[in-house]
Image 1 (tube, rainbow, N blue to C red):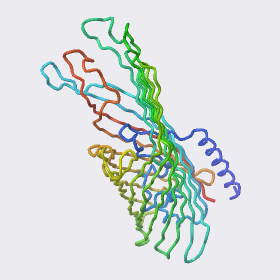
Image 2: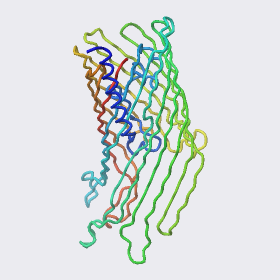
Image 3: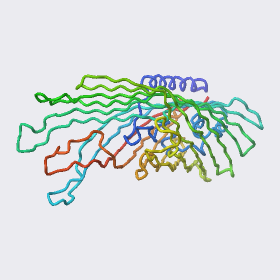
Image 4: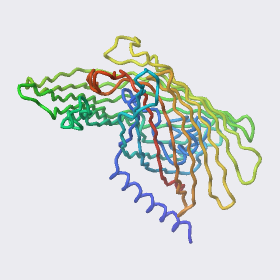
Length: 445
């Protein structure tokens, strides 16, 4: 098979994947605890996510424009990446159950939700100047940066109390709290070689998207002379803004590379609109203002080690730090932090081993703090494999993450909901489990 035929097949495969990406559309979501300012575990690509989302000290094609643009210099031809992922998000809420002597018995499940979401990613990188002293490579990426999505739905049903079987299991209210939208990021970067062992890079990032939140309660049991307590509240934010990333790359020796990067604060502003509707009285209130979010600086540092093995093995370790205590919401003046947001440390580890037949096997691990609760953290395990196809590489990955936190109920419960002998705790233990599978295609021309 000729090289031209191989590249033609790769281009056809990539075109088909891009068409599917266009139909799928981004819809990534996360747990409730990260629905205010965005999820911390976005999906980038099958190769990146399989290795714990490492990239501060490792070339990632066009995605290096996002992680560390200095590593774009590693690309000497043209590389294109595209992929998509399907995620199952499971949320289970528990409350402690006590016996009549106030002794703890077990945790009882009070709510359970299962949702499915899509996400996509695209990147490209190409050498534009082959100078011996100062080679230059450009890169571009389009990714989900801060997904806001979260869905909680439940039916409030009457319990079996006062020995009245006619009241058991009646639907009192149907409730829905849904957050949709994603802050996407388009990054355009350039990497410049500064000799054999050093390079520097700069990327400009344009973030755009929206955050829509809808809370509805439908009163299903309205007695004679009672008010209809149904209501619907909606907020919609249209956001956009620009920031930049600076990166440096250094090669200590032929086996070890290091990288550092700094991403400036991201200020996204736009129109914040609100609408509230109640059944009794039948009223609708609409308001809005021009507001903004200012996300904190991001600091990245990493090290990549390639031992003297045949076939090749790559180890990459990095740390990302985000001082979310400096997060600014236009509803709060200056750097006030009334929500007590916590600074975030994100530790990442990735391993890739390439077999003699050219197939890579990848593993990754992440341990990341949660900005909304300093006591809650997420552990992420990932694995993936690649296979050469039509002159490119098809990759697949699986991820499993777990987050446990304590939080208030999305909707309140009546004080005597379970009868006179029980109390409803104002908080619940929340277990968030996410399972994500992704596929991607990478090709060089």
